[in-house]
Picture 1: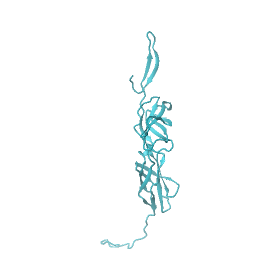
Picture 2: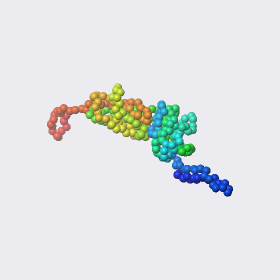
Picture 3: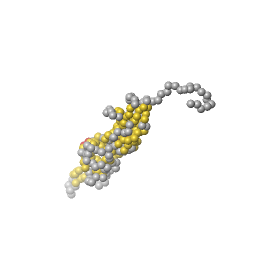
Picture 4: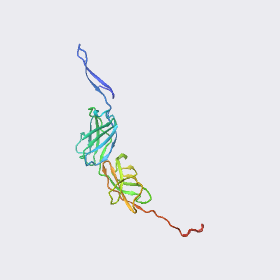
Length: 246
């Protein structure tokens, strides 16, 4: 039997010299597709939610039968039901994955809509990686009258901009974390923070921490604030324009 998405085929049972009677309907649905995972990287130590965007996840929560996942790079294969599946819209569903997924493996997802199993798994992957780490910063020194923009390098800083949930800083030795006035994700090894209006007691140092997915990074090397140089007078204050002078 051939049909297209949205078609409904009705089956009839007929017996010789008897009227035909309806036996049931077969409805074709569109295959779910996947476009993005948020977060797309992490190292779950407890069960965590992965947000999945795409299309054709059903028109209501009752049409989403279950979301399943499979782990590549693991000793076991096959599909496993998510700890919990959640329908948000026809383009947005959520899967709760366990903390037992091995490091350096990849997770693919499959939405089962209206009980139709066997569709293609997502081509986009959730990567189980080491915790994020921050290291060097540029610049490493700023004047106390500025709110500098700081480039921060590191490792395992996510695969997409949505993986960077927060970028914050604190005074070295302190405990209060301040959100960056704005932050930008460039790559898995580079992020950027615009430090909020500078009100630090001088001199001081601050260090940065990134939240990638559900995991906090290590702290970066420090940014040192220094007092900006000032000038009182120059000697001499006048001289010939035709020669170089001190």
